[in-house]
Length: 142
Image (cartoon, rainbow, N blue to C red):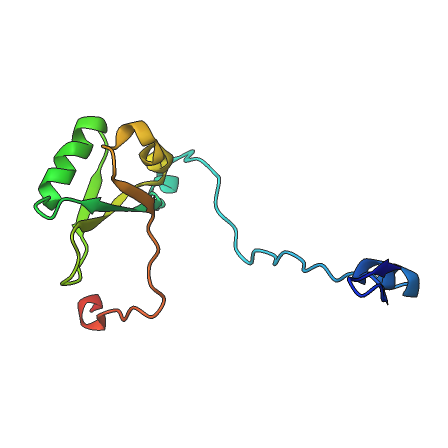
């Protein structure tokens, strides 16, 4: 038994569980209910369908307000000349003193964007997260 500041005996959670024969509950990982294909094309029919390369999304912030999408794209093309890179300017608040962008790249080069020596001092780079409550314009999907 352990004692608190008032010198009263208290039992620790683990000691109590062990003494009574109980075990602490540990949540299990959920099983994946999908598979991801791994077969390579062996004949002409296998090339009729193929997967789209997975993309990674990067947030780049704290850029000067005069920075444009084209400025950032030219900067990135100088570093990754042979890769497809998409740059989208994010809406800014009226009180914001800087601008930010969402960069879309192929997942194979995603980690390369998180090297400090790639970016000028003061630029903020992190993984881009989509808002869950963002409404999708369904009229564009038809």
